[in-house]
Length: 108
Image (cartoon, rainbow, N blue to C red):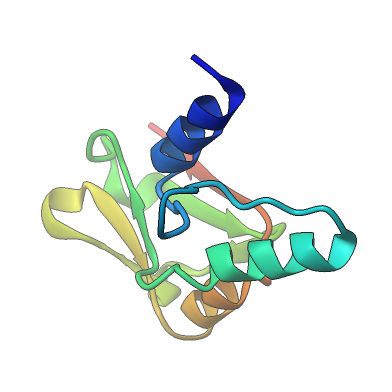
C-alpha cells in the first residue's frame, strides 16, 4: 500500500476526513496546519463522548476537560448510560477547539 492510500485510510479511521479524493489534510506551513486543525475541530457537531459500557456506579464518574473538573450538572448521560453529553458552555468550548484534553474517571 502506498503512502497516499495509508494517509487516506488513517484519515477515514479518524472520523474527520476531508471531502474529495484526498481524505487527509495536507499542510506545508504553520498557517496551513492551523487552517486544517480549525476545519477538523469545526466539524464537531455533537458534544458526545461514547462509552464502551455503562459505568458500574453512575454517581462515581468524574469528567475533566482541559484540566478542569466539569460538574455533573454540566453534563448528562445519553441513552442507556453509554455516552456522556456535554451541555452549555463546555460544549461550546469543545466545538471551538478550546478543550485540548478530556479525561473520564470512573470509580467503583
